[in-house]
Length: 248
Ligand code: SF4
Ligand code: SF4
Image 1: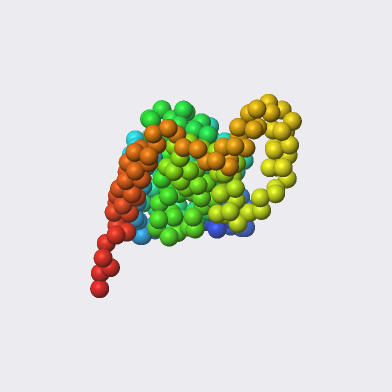
Image 2 (image 1 turned 135 degrees about the horizontal axis):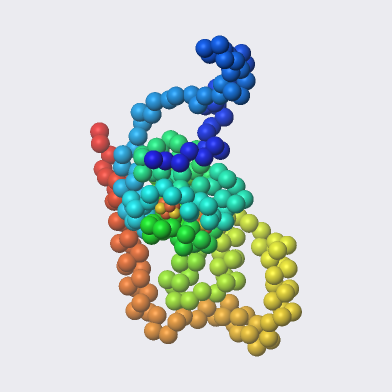
């Protein structure tokens, strides 16, 4: 049985009669508020299977709708429309049109994993949010999200060198998302680093930025990682039916 939180009812689906008397009882105004009935005919029966096929979405079928994930969620505390429990319900029931109404905020999951620790069914809601965001992008419902750009920049650097260098990741991310490098918060962060970190560490960070060292023996691992990633991407596309020949 799904939970119906009041804020999930769309205002346009609420009907109120200014003057209404039923069996002699005046129920005018908010006493006669009803939820408009509706018929949903466009279920996407493949949606759960497709999202479950993407990394992170594997255990979505375990959800029993307790709401612990939404209750613990960092982003929900700031925006009640960000509701992992509700989205999992929509995905499992195939309500694609309803899910698409929130397509521009699903990517805002900050991967804090509070939901993952709160979930009694080991659903990995954080992974489901990532898989859903990925699904929206692969299906062409959304542009590549800033979060996806960041993940790709991060992953590309790890695949290439076997390690990360934060400065390069931030520069690469800003470049991909057309953002100026000189941002107030970043300038402030750099100032504090310079003020508080030992000179030797700052020097090593600067050198790593310029020299781009690799983890020792990374050459062999790099090829294997790239092969695995290519296989995984092909498998994701196949699961979503994106590699099928168009039918004429
Ligand atoms: S990982 Fe995402 S969905 Fe889970 S609590 Fe954090 S912000 Fe919310
Ligand atoms: S906490 Fe787990 S079981 Fe409960 S609603 Fe969220 S995903 Fe489902």
